[in-house]
Image (tube, rainbow, N blue to C red):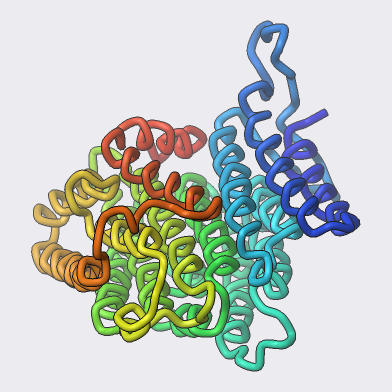
Length: 463
């Protein structure tokens, strides 16, 4: 057996078979159990090992040829596989408590396996085709046919589809030119095509309008799962492009453009957070802000001693997940969670605390997981571009101010600390998640070291 068959094809088959489960409760348990099984299996499987393996370990090959293309999951990709399926398991657990809103079980396993296939395919330019198929699959997972408001879904599908020809055209320009492009003109054309494809994929300004629309129209329990996995794989594909083409790593305009767009996205997202009166909209703009921060870390790559991207990705996955899950708890009875609702109605105090803490971590406050990487970015921006430094500082101030406003509402509505303690099983699960995120902030170096494994396969970026 080989690793792509085990971690891509088997989960896809399991996802389809879960449709046959009669009881909804059984389907959710099998989804989380299968995801946890594939995540834990990464500790026992060795891919193309050198020498003898232990008696409890399983040896697998890294390549799976299909239709003239190879799918490769090497030993350096083990942490990514573990991360994807652990993410599936966690979201499957929370989705169980909100089954009437959830649409990711059981086809979420098929979606995540398709994204892993996009990462694993070689030549990696063919990833654009698999990403397009994954996006088409995600549409019924995000929305149902009873939703009359579908502007966000339509724009999401259109922009993702428009990215496909740009990526494929770039591949056509670069055919046989991984080491040196044919001409400087071709380099510029290929860079522009790649840049446009990445911008459309990620919803970067000015093609970002579908993200706030999606958050107004759809359930965060579905959006959080789909968008976070999709953006994570797309950013890793950007790293794969950068690692694969030496001329792209030496083309400073490419990184300057990412830095500029990242600063714009970070400020755009923070401005949206501070001026919105609806927590659904705030979550959408927080997502935009974090996409901007990930772009900033890549844009600073040429002048940094170490690539901070894995650490920022950990902040993105942990805190944006906490935002989405907390929002689901707050909006279980009402789709839109507004400031007015928080001031006049009853709501889950633990969920609001989790939402506020996630905003504080995104803003880079001390004692949170977001603090060290944000400080590294500040230091590098201060040395390289003072204007961008102050714009980024301003964005973090906006987010902190919004978190303080929500904290005041929570303080005014909380009569005693016992109200924070969970009362139901699903509240205990959220409470454990919040405590875990708080503790992660105190032991963040261990998290960063684990996420650094994502770069193990990108030798040219970390040399």
